[in-house]
Structures are given as structure tokens and as C-alpha cells.
Length: 235
Image (cartoon, rainbow, N blue to C red; front, side, top):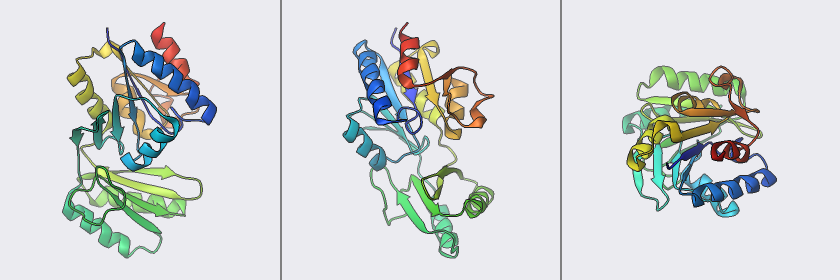
């Protein structure tokens, strides 16, 4: 029976250049057996596409922007959840009066840094102070009922990433496995972050041994790498 693996990207599928090469080799073998591989990430299409091109990553579907968008390997849109335009405009008004927000980026389905607020999939707010980033996240979560947000730590700054409240990785997985007619027992997920909780809970979930503490009570199945997990799935 056909199997499917859904993997987070940062900190999971990619940990180092050496690690990702091993993962790609194993994914190639996995797909040659008639199975499917999906990347599920908080990244936008533009950001992930750079990595796909750089490392020549094979895939069957992409779940992007924390579960706001799912694309086929031919870039057909399977599902997309955009933000309410009035709420986007309101958030931008709030941000314009907040001196702690260093940059604001609006992301549509295939384009990063757009100006039109009509079809926004994700808003990225960049801050350099952790406490201020938490304050902004809290404000958004309390004042906009059709959105939810994630706090992402980068090298020297923080991102408050705002998406539709309807979005989730697990929901997009459901769209894919229904389309592909894959049984629940043959669905495997792996991740290392808070935005992976829902898919790890709902499906056959694994966490990375380096995962965030919030995943520890979700599953006791932990692996060092995606290639290790694929060895387990194939045996």
C-alpha cells in the first residue's frame, strides 16, 4: 500500500548540508517505491523554492505558510486560506504606529513582498527585541479573531508570522491523503516546532530529538533525522 511522509523543513528535513543529502537520497528511494513525500513548512513558496532549487529536493506536494497553502508538484493550488482584507489593513495600521516593528512583508500565494492587501496568505513582522515581539504577537492574537500567529526566531531577529485561523498543516494533509486515497496507518509525519503539533497529534507523528519542548508530551517517538525515520518506515 502507498505510504506518505510529511516532513517539516527547518530543523527537520534540513539540519546541515550533509544531513539533507542523506535525507534526499532516502526520499528518492522512498518515492521510487511508489510512495509520496511532502514538505510542510512555515516558509513561503518563494523562500522554500530557493532551497528546493539549491538542493534539488524531490517532492509530491508542498504545504506552505504554516498550513495556509498546499501545492501539487505541478504547482496546482489544492487549497489556500487568505487573510481577511479588512484585518490585514487594520494590522498594517497598527504596525505603522509601532516603532518596534522593523519591517513588514506581505506574502501572496506565489509572491513575496506584495503591496495589494486583497489576497494575502501571510504577514511577516520583523522585530529585534524578543519581549516586543511577544507583545505584538499577543496584540494580534487578542484583537483579530480570523487570524493566528507564530513567533519565529531567526539569527538576530524575530518574526511574528500571521496567517488565517483556518490554516493548519494537519488540515492540508487531510486534503492530500483524501485526494491520494491513503489509509491513516500509512501516513507519517515528523517535525520539530510548535506549528508541527497538530499534524503530529493527528497522524502517525514523530519528533526530532532536537525538537522544542512543547513536542515532548505530544509524542515519545523521536528520531535523529528524516533518513533514520525513512529507514524505520521502509522496514
